[in-house]
Image (cartoon, rainbow, N blue to C red):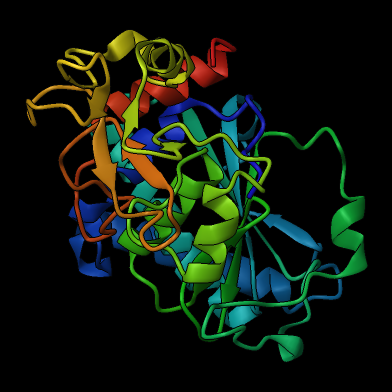
Length: 306
């Protein structure tokens, strides 16, 4: 998994972190529903003409110059309405948060995938990307690609989100979390866990560190602190100092930022640690809240301090 370019901003996760409140179409106000449906009909009508562009905008032309990040949905034409509704949820949340100056835009395309080649990969959603996908403009750094598939479990590979067309908005939020630099906090598949926990991936997650033991010397303890992505936010000791001078890892106060065991590396012989004791959207995607700490960590990375 590769993390998204720094030009992605904090606002995306703030936005998707709130879509739990609008998880169904009916949550939109009536006038908004009518507006969205009118836009969908116009786009679908354009798609019937010979001038149908390979990438069509789901956002008003007046908004495009102010886009901070673009969600590029890839799918069959029948998925267009779903993509538009997902985008509408995000835009609505931005309005509720009074963050209209930080805009998310949307695009829809059938250009980069062959829908007839879509199939589940070990139960996970997947569609083959065409060779032209790798040739897209290198300047498109503020784009999150979301491939809408006919079936399969949501997953993110190399920064590309693969999402079942009937997947919930909460599943989308979890996968966008991966694209923004977060690791799973639940027990990974054994093969994946072994590789991840052994450090075989070029991926330094914002929400996790891995150690070989659950105890460290004092020198190792100080080094661990210096390596934590959430170092500046620590509110307590990361473990308990034994009379032998050894630190037994694991913070005591579950209400404060520290070091808490995660299930990610279960069964691998390694120990995974996260900054918060609470369950987050990266452990259980049905959880509604995205911790404020996680938003701050994204901001630090975007500013270049992580």
